[in-house]
Length: 238
Image (cartoon, rainbow, N blue to C red; front, side):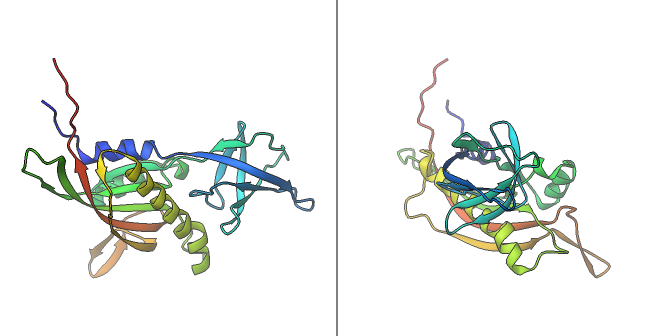
């Protein structure tokens, strides 16, 4: 008998399969700062201030030009970049209730070990197709968060958009593309709702005062989508 896979298990594999490969098309060095300007095919969800590993050397992303697909990177030792390909840092996947989210993230001290993140909020509703001849198994009503670290005290609105909203929107689009490329989902003419989360928080009332339970300062996007999942028609014998 084929047992259905739970949605968190399916989405774990989806996130793990999002391509990370970056291709450098041209590069030049700023003679004044020594920074290296990399033109790449796709910036994906690159973030200002994050580190990228290129040929086993860590570079910090100093700036991003979304219009021209250019990231400016630096290295304290001034090590040149020889390769034309590297992998971007991978997103993390979590799932749970809002309270569980606070505990999950609090347990991980290093921000680069938990963000950028994709978070499936529990609980979600599923509607099963009862017709045994239907190749569709069920519809799952999902709320997903795409979040990264922010700085509430110092960033102005434009910085939130450049440093969290834009890259997390790109992460969301890469996630959708992976769903579309996967044969387990019906993504034809699929629509979804999305909302920017400039200052994301999980709030609790305490004596009339709202308190954010999250220690991390997070910013990004939320997506509401109904995922139609196909039946697993693989045949297993034992």
